[in-house]
Image 1: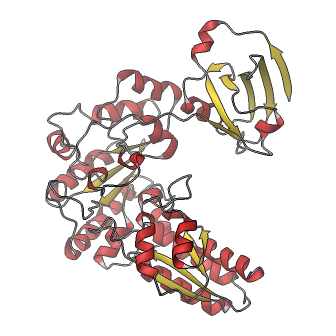
Image 2: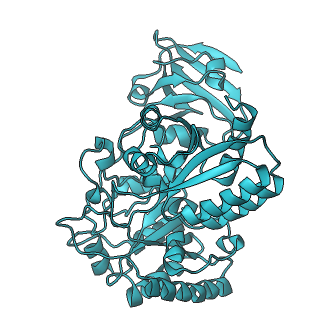
Image 3: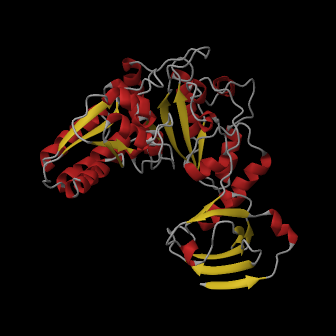
Length: 450
C-alpha cells in the first residue's frame, strides 16, 4: 500500500467528488485511515460522477489508486491491491433514483394503501439502479447522454420491462399516448455489448394470447445478447379503487400458458443454448402444476424476479436434510406467507424429524395489502400480530429476513422487531429465508437455548 500526500488538484476535478459517510471497522478503508467526511475524487485516474462510478470502478478490481481529499483539506493518493471480491468498506452518498414518468395500468406503487413511509411511494425509472440492483426499467424516457454512458461504461447487464412488442399496446400498458420505439434501442445496446434481461408483466385480456406470442418471438430474435425473459403475473392489491380493471390468470389459463411455455423453451433450445423464457413460480402455484427440475432454470437468471425460487429451495432443503443431525429438545415458531406455506410446512416437518426440534409453522395472510398478495416478502408487522396473537407455542419466533426493508430493521408498516416481540411476548430471531437459514438458526438456539 502506498500513501502519498499531494497538492491540490486542478479545479475541474472539484466538480467530481463523492463524500464518505462511514467506514466499516476492520475494512480496507479503515486500514487506509479513511474516515467519514473524506471525499473521493478519482479512482484509477477516472473522475467520479456518482455512486455508480464508484461501484463500477471498484467492483472486481484488484489494483486500485484512490485520489482522496481529507477532511482537513489535505489530498492523498492511495495505491493498494485487494482481492477481486473484497469490499473496500466505504459507505458513500447514494443518488436518489430518477422518477418514472409512466402511468402503468398495473403499477404496484399506485396500489399501496396510505400511511406507509414516503420512500415506498417513489416510482423509479433509473438505468443506474437497473445495473446496480437488477431493478427493471422501461427505458421509455432515457436520454441520449444516458444511452452513451451505458455503452461507454459497459453498464451490463441491464433489466428491461417490455410487456409488449406492439408499440401501441406497450404505450397503453404504460399509460402513455405514445412512446419512443423500444426495439431499436434494445438492438443498439446489444450491438454495443450490453447484455439484457427482460420481463413481461402478464395482464390477461391485454398482452397475453397472440400478443404474447409475438412479443416472445420478437425478443427471442435478439438472442444471445438478450439473455432471458421472465413471464410474471400481474400483482393486484386490495387498494385499486379508481384504477383500471385488471385480473390475474385463473387455474385453466395458467395451465394453458405453462403448456405453451414448454413448446417455446423447446424451440429456443433447438436454436440456441438456452430455454430463454421462464415463468414465475406463482404461475405454477396458480396452475397446480409441479415445477420443472432445478436444471431447467439453467443459471437462474430471473431468480430475483420470483423465477425458480421454490425449485432452488427444494434443492437446498434436500442438502440440509441430508446433513441434519439430532439436536437437544427445543420448540420454535416460524412464519411464512400464504403462497409458500405448503412448501415451508413440508420442509419444517422433515427437518423436525431429523433434528428432534419441534418447528411450528404459521401461515400469515396479507390483510394490509389485501387483494391477491400472498408472498412472504410483503408481510407487515400488523399482519404478523393479527396472525399470531395467542397462537405461539414457544418464546422464540423465527422471522424470515425478506420481510424487512432492504438495509433496515423495520417491517413495511414501520413496526420494529422489538415492537413485534413486545406485542407478542416473544424474542424475534431473524433468519435467512432459505433452508440453510432455518437449519443454522436451530443449531444456534440449541447450542444456547437461553
